[in-house]
Image (cartoon, rainbow over all chains, first blue to last red):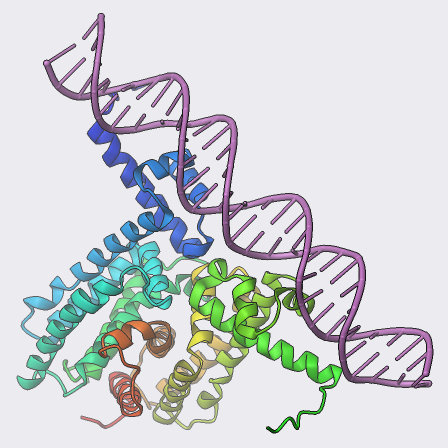
Length: 213
Length: 213
DNA sequence: TCACATCCTGACCGTATGGTCAAGAAGAGA
DNA sequence: TCTCTTCTTGACCATACGGTCAGGATGTGA
């Protein structure tokens, strides 16, 4: 048997435990909601005694806050796709791909985010009012530029963005419903590709940004 | 002062109280989630003592179940729009209007539904597997017929439906985010109209069902 | 009017939960 | 080796929650 593991340094222990706890917490918060989640459940999933959780995160709220903030960072990162794109076909296409990939690989995070917003964002309202507003204004300006340059139809950029968010996140947040309608099975690689392709096709054609017709 | 209220009959009392409780419960479940909602909160909002709630609904689960089932009925009803429509412009257009109207007037219901599905539908899984599957198959057939008749492009009907659900329900479920991005104000009549118009415009053009270009 | 069924509700109970603590184990640094 | 800091954890506590119940109030039907 290997047993090659040298004893972890204090710093490593802290890093590793915080990582494990945050990972477990994200799952439990996603599955049970903030109110339904219990520290005991998170502790069990993380493989640590409950008291140890309170050593690293003083309260349930503090742990939750940490989880939500991390998800928000991730959410914003998907926007890089938008920025250096020459036009909507590349920019919006890449954005859809990126957000669908997040929905597929981090559905728990998406659910926690959705839950937080649905409950009037008690924890990250300040982020919404600052970072998210700036981010949104920036992307709306990009879309408006594309419109002015004649690269797409004059669509209200705000509602276009909402549509992109809604559609892509739906595959994570309502993943259970989608699986049920797929005979109880998770979407296959091909089905994910079909979803991405259909979404891109409808939206890009819908804003007059491609020569599909 | 009026004081015209004759004493309510037993039957009326029951009807009225059940209505008031269900209404309060929907709000509280939407705002706090199942786990975060308390019978005391619901009782306070309904203006009744907590013990009275347990007289009409034996357990918290039973009350929640009732709330969710009612919402599901409402959700399905919006589909009438689809059925007698001659083509996608009328059918999908009317469906978008109907679902946006629900999002505007019953956002709490939409949130409860979203929450239920996000948590793997512990209460209405059987409905998903029967009624929802049938409903979805039926609408997919309608869309396929429109495609076969050349009234729209050959789009995967399944993902088109998901897109419709996602986009319209987003305005309820993420209403708080949308308000925050609207300087903290609820959408005006004009803004709701703009939202509906933009969504219909993108989707109908996106499936090749209108001569907008 | 009277007997009955339904409705109402304050007080109460068992449990589960978030959080605390004290005492010990274990790495760090000299 | 010795001391200090960090980490670990079983036992414990106060509170809040879902749910119960007994006894009274109120409409109902004969």
